Each structure stands twice: as C-alpha cells, then as structure tokens.
Amino acid sequence: MTRSRILGTGSYLPAGLLTNFDLEKRMDTTDAWIRERTGIERRHIVAPGETTVDMAEHAARAALTAAGRAAREVDLIIVGTCTPDLIFPNCGVMLQGRLGNLGCPALSVEAACSGFIYALSLADKFIRAGESKLALVVGAESLSKLTNMNDRGTAILFGDGAGAVLLGPAAEPGILSTHLHADGSHLELLRCTGGVSAGFHPEGDYIKMAGSEVFKIAVNMLGRAVDEALEANQLGREALTWLVPHQANIRIIQATAKKLGMSMDRVIVTVADHGNTSSASVPLALDVGVRDGRIKRGDLLLLEAFGGGFTWGSALVRY
Ligand code: COA
Image (cartoon, rainbow, N blue to C red):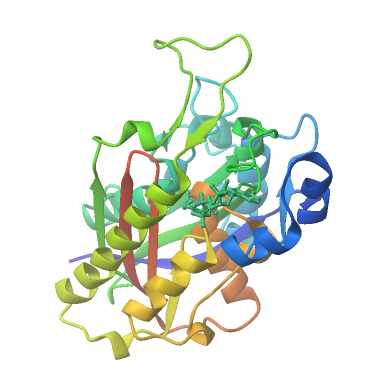
C-alpha cells in the first residue's frame, strides 16, 4: 500500500518583532511574568499589507526547494489557517494561484491551532488513496490581526508565521499515523467573537480565552493524544527521537514531555521566539529542527497540537 513521507520542509517568519518589553509599555504586565508563565520572549508580527497567503507562499517555496521539486508538480494544496486573507477564495486556492500549478484541488482547513495536523492527516489520506502524488501542506497565520492588544490575557501569547511540508508517496511509511479529535462543547472557553453569519462587531472581533481552564484541558487532552499515538503503533515512549509540539506555552510543552518521560533536550521548542502561531507552530518548529540539524532522516517524531474548538490531534512521523 502506498504511504506518504515528508520530502521537504520550509517556514517563514515576518521581520517585525514584538518583545515582552514592548508589551510592558502597552499594558499591565512584565517581561518576567510572561517568561515565567508562558516561556515567550518575543513574537513575529506581519508588516502592514503582509498577509497569511504571503507567508504561506514563502514557506511553501522553501519546502519545495528543500525537496528539490517544482511547484508545477504539486497536485494537492491544503492550508491550515484560522486567519485567511479573505472569506473566499480560500487560502489554498490563493496559494495555488501564486504557485501557478493551476487545476489541482486546493483547500483550507479551519481547526484553529490544530489546523496543520488536520491538514497533514488529510493530505496523507489523499496520498494513501492514490489521489495525490505531491501534496503541499501549510500552516499559516496572522494571529496578530485577531488579537486585542489591550487584553493582557491574549496579547502576550500570539504571533504570526508560516510553516510547510511537501508530502510524497513512499514504499516505507513516513507518516505512520495521524489521530484527530474535536469537542465542540467548550465554545465559551476559546473563540473569536465575530463571523459572517453570526455578525461582526463594529468595535472589532478578537480572540477571547479563559486561559487557565484552556491550559488544564490542553494538558489533559495532549497527554491522552500522545498515549493514543504510541499505542496505535505499538511503540513505547523510548522509541521517540523528538517531540515536536504545538508551541502555546512552555509549561504545557513540559507537561507533555514529562508524560512521555522525555527530557527537554529531545523537544523542539520555539515558543520563546515565535509565541503561539496557531496552525503555523508545529511546521515552523519542525523546519527549525530540520534546518539546524537536530532532526535527521530516520528519526521518529511525535507532532501534536491543541486548539480552539476544541480540536486536537497527533501525527507520528518517521522523518
Ligand atoms: N501579566 C501579568 N499578570 C497577568 C497577566 C499578564 N499578562 N495575565 C494574567 N495575569 C494575572 C491574572 O490577572 C491573575 O491575577 P490574580 O491572581 O490577581 O487574579 C494571575 O495573573 C494568574 O492568572 P491566570 O490566568 O490564572 O494565569 P495562568 O498561569 O493560567 O497564565 C496563561 C495565563 C494565559 C498564560 C495560561 O493560562 C495559558 O497559557 N493558557 C493556555 C493558553 C493556550 O494554550 N491557548 C491556546 C490553545 S492553542
């Protein structure tokens, strides 16, 4: 049976930086509090006029270059994002227009911070089914556009960026398994306040979050998700080379690593420099680990994410 593997990775971070010291000047917070409670020191912020699709294109082209493949060969594009440029066309289609590989299916998936894991799982299934031979999977977000810069409970967390992988068929499995979950009964704990049919608010629509409740549920669900991934593959925790987690909060990452019995030097951590970039966070961390040489071919990686909805999931990947 055909399986899929990662042929190349890429990422992009906008040049603008928002540090904890910048936030200290705007609101009642401190660099020390933010670092201690979240592990975040700075986040990248899009320039005026720079969009999610702009960042997705940079990341996608970097993944294509890393894999030595041309954009015209891509026959499926899936973009995970909750901050699309427009309501429609979707970001996948807009990215396709930029890359010029017209005609192939292109879509975006909205699963908040789990968007990339959802997109990766879908692309893997297209390849396994023989429907795709070269799939571009992207996570890209302009979360700064959805963040109320007067709300210290959220403004300290979120940043912008994009990450991408190119998936192709392989005899030996690269994507060993993916597991996706959702629980739509906690809308009030994490959401963006406006939308097309619910209506937009004239004063703006922003992320609203009950941080400590979300924190507890995230730790619990991610703990279960990593167990599920290992059990489904009949693997023990010691088989893992790297944990590549969603970068929401260093304390959530530490709790998941502890659950796996992994020391933090086997975890790819970018949260200090990127903040929480939602769908972009896992592919960004993956690309950082690949490019700095820590993640090598043959390594066993556990990717996981948790986000608004709630949505969560994992991917066990032989790189
Ligand atoms: N600076 C200083 N103090 C702050 C603050 C800030 N930016 N934000 C909150 N506080 C205060 C609170 O008002 C509260 O004060 P009080 O004790 O006097 O009432 C105190 O710090 C503790 O607040 P709490 O919300 O319990 O803090 P916390 O340890 O849970 O940290 C988050 C807050 C948001 C950092 C943390 O809950 C978190 O990361 N949650 C999960 C976020 C997440 O993963 N979201 C996305 C899912 S993808």
